[in-house]
Structures are given as C-alpha cells and as structure tokens.
Image (cartoon, rainbow, N blue to C red):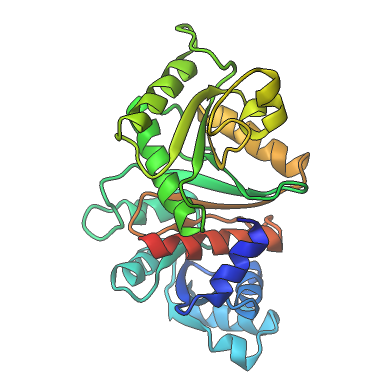
Amino acid sequence: MTYEELIRSIQEASEKKTIAVAHADDISLFQAAKEAIDLQLASFIFTGPAEKMEILAEEAGLTSRQREKIELVDTSVPKESAIKAVELINKGKAHVLMKGMLSTSVLLKAVLNKEAGLRTGKILSHTAGFSLPGRDKMLFITDAAMNINPDLNEKAQIIRNTVEAVKGLGVENPRVAAIAAVETVNPAMEATIHAAALTQMNKRGQITGCVVDGPLGFDNAVSEEAALQKGIDSAVAGKADILLVPDIETGNVLYKSLTYFGNAVVGGIITGAKAPVILTSRADSVNSKLFSIAMGTGSSSVH
C-alpha cells in the first residue's frame, strides 16, 4: 500500500469520517481542512473561539461548499476545546481527534481523563507513517514520540496498537521488525533480548495479526539485499512494514533522518485510545498534514 493508494481508498470509501479538531485557532488548520475536503478525505468539527474561527475561515478562502464540511463549536480556552473535542468522539459525532493550537499535554489530559476521556485500558503509543522516494510501499515506525523506554510488555502492546492501525490502512498481516544494533541475541543488549522474546510471543499466539521477527538491524529489516548478504532467512527481513524501535531516542533520530535526509512525506497518529489522535504542528507541510489525516481516518475504521 502506497501513500497514493491510501488516499484513493479513503476517497472511494462509502462512509466519510469526521475529525474533531481541538482549538482550531490558526489558519494552517483551515488550510489543511480545505485540502482534505477537496480530496474528499473527511469532514471536520472545529472547537475554539467562534468569532476568530469565522475570520480564519474567511482568510483561508473557503468556498461555500467547503464551509459546509466544517462545523464550528464555540469554546474559549484550549482546555475547554480539548474536553469538547473528546466529548464529540464519545458521543459518536466525530471519529478522529486532531490536535489544534494547544499543547499536547492539554490534549492528552482530556484523552486520559478517567470519567470523560478516551481510555481503553491499552497503552497509548505513536505510529509514524513514511512515504519514501523509491520505496513501493509505506513504512511505519513505532514508537518515536510517546513511550520513552518501553519494557517487554509495553513493546508487545505497542506492536498490537500499530498492527491494528496499519490494518485499517490496508496493510494485511503486516511484517514487524524488532530493531536492534545487531541481529543476534546479546545478553548485554536489552533490545536484542526483547526482540527475540517478541518474536517467540508472536509464534505462540500472544501477539497476533502480524509476523514479528528480530532482532534485526535497520539495514536488513528494509533491504532484501542486505538481509541476503548477512544470510538472514526470514519472512520479515528486507520486507518490513513496521519497525519497532527499542526506545524513543532511536525512534526520534530515525524519524528525523528519514524526514530531512530521506525526503519522506510523514504522517503520525497516537493509537490505543477509543479513536486515533492526530498530532500535527504548524511547521508540518500540507502533504504531511494530509498524510496524518489519512492515517487517522483510515485507521479509525478499526476502532
């Protein structure tokens, strides 16, 4: 599944999803929504100061047809906007939550609220999607943004979250590579022990819906030639759909390397809640915002 194929599959879906945007207090959010509406990806409910949002809608040049796909809900401050956006999800009026102009901590506090949030009992984790030049399918990396140094059980949950999300994006039976610095188990390197354990958990039905293998180096996870040169015979080596990184530092560096040196289009969502949570920033390109929106609307079909 390529990024372009993902966009087409959402365009062809009979049911369009609605995205609740928490505190839509910046023109970039209206511009992203405008592009998404033109591509027939979703409709939107924006929470935030109604008077300012009306001005932003006009400044963004929304047509009357585009404006029909954006509902405005008046809230005054970021905390209130986040609570209202989460409420829209819980009431079934929206299917995906999206971060607007508020801090991630404020948004996640509303998501994790015990009484009115979007808790499911699962760990929350981040799934990043990459569309890379010269690669004939999307690549997913987890977790580069949420969990700092996950233990074995948390890594198993992260895999389950990511597998569920990418299946909603059309990737059947995804191949998961548990990444480490070497391809053999080394007691001094915890990542290799975790990788081997996760592989065995997959073989014994504790992690299902995917194929897990590791430890694998980054090179032989994504390159069949590299795997062949090292004599690695695996259903995952060279064909990985998902890279499970050992910790947030590894994930963060890899994420930014692919973005800045690999010329990747990047999208990202938080998984493990009742609905996908889209995290974007004002600095993200239009294509990256659209990728995140596509990931959110696509993966929401499995929630």
